[in-house]
Every structure is written in structure tokens, then in C-alpha cells.
Length: 445
Image (cartoon, rainbow, N blue to C red; front, side):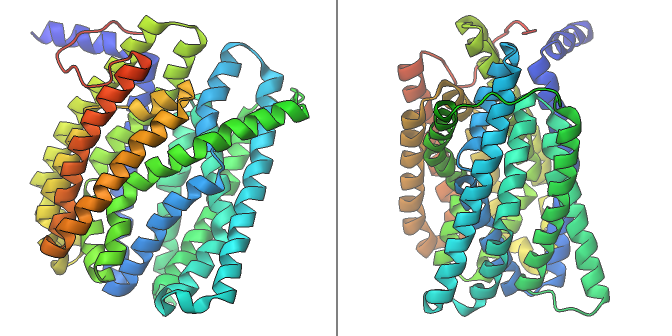
């Protein structure tokens, strides 16, 4: 039995996609502890309402950030592996240059619009949110460029570079900033903390840009024409609605709670969600590498190989999510108590959200498959159904059961999504994305 397990492990590690995913997961496990430490520190030092404001606004930035990147984070996973496989290095350099300019202009315009809205119509925003939104608007171009560079690193398969700066370096810098602010006697309200987040993101952007510049070929002259630039921009922007909706679906429960419950209740729910970081990072790790592997198979017109990649990725995601959720639930009460005594009441949310993560893992990286195939309408249709179901379920359950109702709604919605994704993806692409937990598949080189 032990020999059989060794052989299966050796075969699995021959798959470069799985090796990349495991590297990403290893980094994200470390990031889970760092990120959890940051959230515990903020929850301990900030007033519960201020922490709730921070949680709600940072969540909104995660969603709106997809708009600021104009789809170039996701199109990088489509174009970079393809141009690399076909050795079109001049096209690759042209795409990167075009994306950088587009993201800088697009995110700058969004930031200007947000500031103009706050200046001209301040009465439409809760006064407690006014200054924090202004701080985030000023830092929005920085956050968008950081996201774009992360997508570039992901497209090249540089998984450490796509995870360590944003998920380890930034939280460490924020914690250092918070510590200095506390020693200096500054009030750690939402404005102060979000200002520290933006400053930390500036440093992360600089580090990430320098590391990318050192690894990219320097003697390649970008090959661009107006037609090709329009093609890259149009393709990326067409991806944007689906991927923004996908990101919206990831955070939809926290965003809706921001309208249905007070900030202090939203912060309790967020603590439960963040305590499941290990499970989330397992799924993110495979998502990070799946798109590149899928794109390489498509570039080679290898349908059988692509199905093997899909099955391997989904099975691995499913089997690793289960123990990560189980470990989190076992340690649930101590984890929540780290945030503060009031957060322990969110343990039922932790249980339900853990179940939702397991259900979501059963369809693996279906959304990444649709991205690299350019099936934007199908992706948008699936996410729209999921978001609509979530809004409806939460509007019914949250008024009745509070934050526990929100967690229950996520379980229901993930079940609906599983059925929709499996059926529609198989019907339109011919690929099976639902987990096959006991299927043996060959390793891909």
C-alpha cells in the first residue's frame, strides 16, 4: 500500500501544473497565517465599527479592482502562454506594454470619477465611509497596477512572484505600519488603516515591478500595430464583465451584509470567512496555475490532454479542500477567539461556509477553462445566475437568521452553481468539470 502511494505521488509530481499548484498552495498557506495575523491585529486594535467599515470597503476594492484592470489580469493567462509556446516574443512584449498603458489609464479614470462623485454628491454616502472611500480612490491606480503585474507573473508561470508580494509582503508591511501607528499614539480608525494599506501597496508594486523587469527579456522590441492593440484591448475588456461578476460572486455575501446588517455584525461574519483562508488558498493555488495549463493544451489543440488537466486539477482541489476545511473547523473556536470574545458567536457561520467551500471545490477551475477558451458570454451567464440566486437567498434568510442565514444562503447557492456549471460547461464545451474523485488519470508533461 505504501509503495502504491509513493508511486501515485511520484506520478503526480511529474505534472508541472500540479507542482506549480503545490508551490502556490505552500506560499498561500504561509500567507494564510500572515493574513490571519493581520486581521486579528486589526480586530483587536480597531473599534468593531471601524473594523467593519474597513472590511466592507476593502471587499468592494477587490471587486471593483477587476474593472480597473480592464480584463488584462485574466487575458494574460490566455495570451502569455500562447505567445510563449509559439515563440512570438515580440507579440508578447507588445501585449505587456499595451496592458500596462491601458490599466494605468483605466484605473486613473475610475479613481477620478470616484473622487468627483464624493466631491459633488457627498450626501449620498454615509459620513463614516466618506474619507475611507477617498483614501482608497487615491490608491486605486496602484492597486490596479499591482493586480495587473500579478496576472503577468501568473501568465509566465512564475507562481512565487504572483503570490509572495501581495499575500505575504503587503500584510507584513501593513502590520509593521499598524504597530508604528499604535506606538505613535495614532487613532487606528478606518482612514488610518486604509492609508497604511495604500502605502504598503506602493512598496509592493515597486518590488514586483523590479522583479518582473529583471526576469523579462530586455532585447525584444514590442511588435504592436493599432489593429493588434485594439484586438488585445477588446479581448480583455470583453473578459471584464464575466470576471468582475466572478469576483463579485466570491465576495457577494460580505457585500450584501454591508447593506443588511450593521458593520459590527458584518465584521463577525468576515472573521469566520477569513478563518477559512486555508481552504480558500487551496482553491486559489490551483486556479493560479490551471489557466496556464489549459491555455497550453488549447495552443497544442490537445483535447484529450486538456480533459486530463481538468480532471487532475478538479480532483486535487476537491481532496485538498476537505482536510483544510476540517482542520479549520477543529481549530474554529480558538481561531475566532483570537479576533476577540465577541467573534466566537460566528462559529456556526464557519461550519456552513466550510461546507460551501467543499461544494465549490467539486467543480474545480471551470471558470478558468471558460476564460482561456474565450467563452465570455457563457461565463457571464453562469456567474449571473449564481449572483442572482445569492441575492435572492440572502434577502430572504438574512432578515430571518442574521449572519447565520447569510452562511446558509452560500451553501444553497453553491449547490445551485454546481448543477449549473456542470451542465452548461459540458453542453457548450464538451468537457466534464465535475469532480471524479476516484478516477486515475495520466500525468501531463
